[in-house]
Length: 228
Image (cartoon, rainbow, N blue to C red):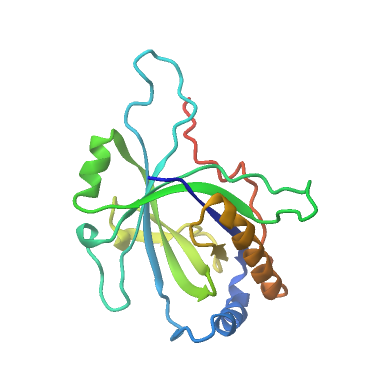
């Protein structure tokens, strides 16, 4: 698998502003058919190594989590775990935004290694020496805007392993939990980020006034495993 790169930005949307954001996205998405109902149903499982120390007992500092992600609803019917189109990914820590050039980089970008999986994906990860650490669901709306993918979703925690039906809102204490907007570029090579990054920056300009898109602190998005 070859490392590719992805550019992205995030924003928080108050629940009361969701309608205005979706209206703006419908305009920007052009001919995309959207009936107002959720069309994003993603299940993600994060995996950690079973053996947390190498044989010589030195602490490891470069292990990355493994991420399994798949849709569990196709718009008409539920997709069983064994029938989902799972993708396996490792995400590097994003590069810090740059302000030292003539054109500052205001978006996040990071290296990604991603592959489609077939067969028993859980047995495969077990064979690699990994075990489930936690899992969650993204549920909401997604739109194609030119080459970009725009997702507006809420996060749900899963209470029973692998059962998305047990998912509840991550912030159950809030009566109006916020929505997250995530704008991502397609996977590209290192040179492609020079095109995809500014495309996301232009999109952020179009959304200004209804949602502020930012580059998240790259340290907060680290995927390295912290061993005690």
